[in-house]
Length: 161
Image (cartoon, rainbow, N blue to C red; front, top):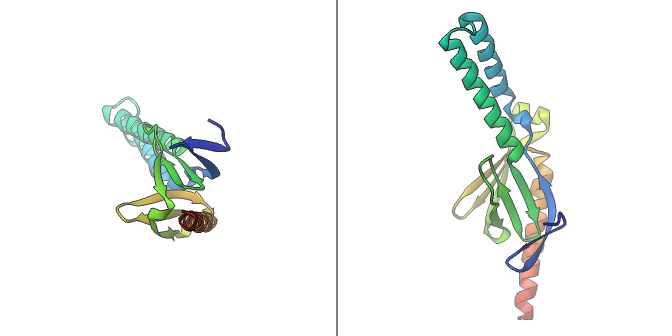
């Protein structure tokens, strides 16, 4: 598979932009887990069942969060948006531009500080949330621009046929 093009349904699809979420979105969870590990060491000790179980659960949660962030991928193409979320997902899910009804951005105060945000894409049937996206306003503009150019291509094709 070439980085420039992806072949699906015998139509050439060009990749406009590919991006991943940032790990910064989980700062509060990491702080709570770090406090839990500290509590496991000081209050219970590492030799007790309680201390070991808190330590192991925190370790599993941290590993899962890191794996899910680094294996999630969003790809904007000229025909739609491809999504692959989580460590156990192998296939991309596709959102066509003609199915997109609304795109909204949600940013908390810490997300604004980190220059990240959550991008929500609403279609007729589902709502997809892209969490922890860098520069979400630019991504929203890019999706709207590609949606408009796809609409122009479809109307030109209808006029020709």
